[in-house]
Amino acid sequence: NAGVTQTPKFQVLKTGQSMTLQCAQDMNHEYMSWYRQDPGMGLRLIHYSVGAGITDQGEVPNGYNVSRSTTEDFPLRLLSAAPSQTSVYFCASSYRGGTSEQYFGPGTRLTVT
Amino acid sequence: ELKVEQNPLFLSMQEGKNYTIYCNYSTTSDRLYWYRQDPGKSLESLFVLLSNGAVKQEGRLMASLDTKARLSTLHITAAVHDLSATYFCAVDMWGREGGTASKLTFGTGTRLQVTL
Image (cartoon, rainbow over all chains, first blue to last red; front, side):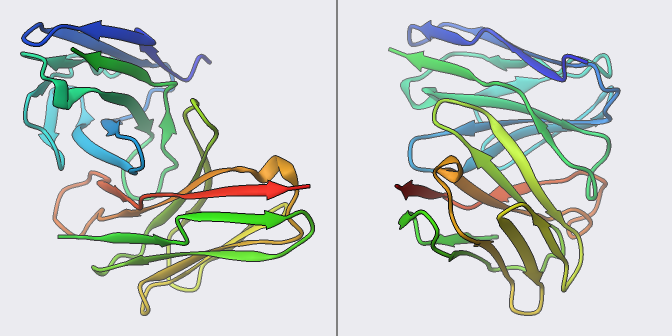
């Protein structure tokens, strides 16, 4: 199994550009989520999904959209990038919520100039 | 709003010594996770604690959860250099706000440096 994969690994955007961060998992996990990690801070939840077709907002959802059309994929879209979105983004998945270990992807380092 | 505080934020310790990292949280929860992160890397799951009094051990690390005190500890026994990393605790509000989703709130991390 590849586990949780994310692309790209690095990305530089100009303010106002849009892009999609890709996340895929091959473990047939129901639950997937996106976090951002800023320097000196822990991770903060952006959006999550408990299954295909079901998504909800986390702690810091503004400026991001998600959709989940398949169990495997959970892309994160930045609608109009802002310098405040410069961060490292991690995707995670687990078999289900509450009792299952979460597996994190390798991360995408995003810089918005 | 759930707040998760870790202390210390930075810990420099000698090889062979013991130490404890503390994770306090502000709202009732009986699910807590510990992760390790190496510089520039992703998070690696260390422990999943799912009930009051849970204790788990792996090698030189032992984690415990006291839900009444809203406190988890990560104890390091006879530290070795390979344990140098940043350690995060994360509190799960699963079941507390309805739904079936895990919503993790992370502490700010404890950067551990083990010196020779």
